[in-house]
Amino acid sequence: MQQADATSWMAMFSLNMLRMSLELAKTNKIYEEVSAKFFRHFLNIAWAMHHIGKKDLSLWDDQDNFYYDVVEMSDGSTQRLKVRSLVGVIPLFAVEIMNKDLFEELKDFQRRANEIIRTRPDLASLISNLENANKNGDFLFSIMRGFRLEHLLKRLLDEDEFLSDYGIRSLSKFHEKNPFVFGEEGHHQIQYEPGESRSGMFGGNSNWRGPIWMPLNYMIIQSLRKYYTFYGPTYLYEFPTGSGIKMNLNEIANELTKRLIKLFEPDENGKFVYHSDDPENHFATDEHFKGQHLFYEFFDGDSGKGLGASHQTGWTALIANLIMDMEEHK
Image (tube, rainbow, N blue to C red; front, side, top):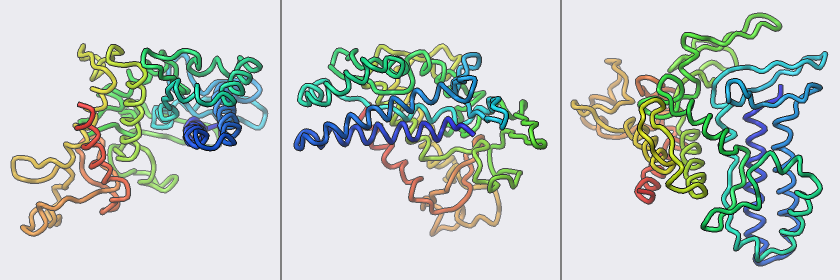
């Protein structure tokens, strides 16, 4: 299995390490060599995402304009697993913005990076151009170039696909009526399920079958804000897709945050969206608890009902960070 999400996590890791080593290099020049190493790692990972197996297959599908996992068979043949899930969204996370002032301070890193680009233009062509800074002097390091970002957002911000009233679903609602079927070694099917999985495969409800996960939504929003730092307020997209309403990436990040906040807002009866209608759910009615928030592990992709463990404050409490970020980026 050649995984779009696992590969992208490593690209993100390399960029994080690059960013940290560049910061350290300001006070200790030995880290310039380390920075160049992580820069090359990032480029190699970006290249690997587009050269899979004997057929040199890309994880990006030019027909669907989306990233998919690829299965490589024992005979060397390959097949894309055309499942529209967070697997194809995670490449969005491999993004960092760095200012030219940082590179001007680090001449050795700049020399090493330019040498890598000169000797391996095939690697550098897969990412945003290192030599093109925006008007603020910022460089964009990312797997996704402009056209890929644009096509990904069309699906991500589509209410018939990933966009829910309460955030981004983990699986496109397209698969509700169009389940993905993989016929090798038996019959395997993935279908949109907004809440608990009806299948015990791969751990049952731990699957990304449709629910909303706060940490992944948090990372989507953080990534959009980084792209906004580079592209600025003139780079506009429809939100929601098909609405005709155009917003910049910062505004879209705020709108996604507002949808996540709705999970924690009371209705006209003072009941929070994540509470179920189960009469045994005393947390929703007990006078001592009904005003106290629960932090569920994940949420139903259609109704917003809280699911899984609670309190899952280890990540669902990120809603507090999102609220603060939205105030800062109004």
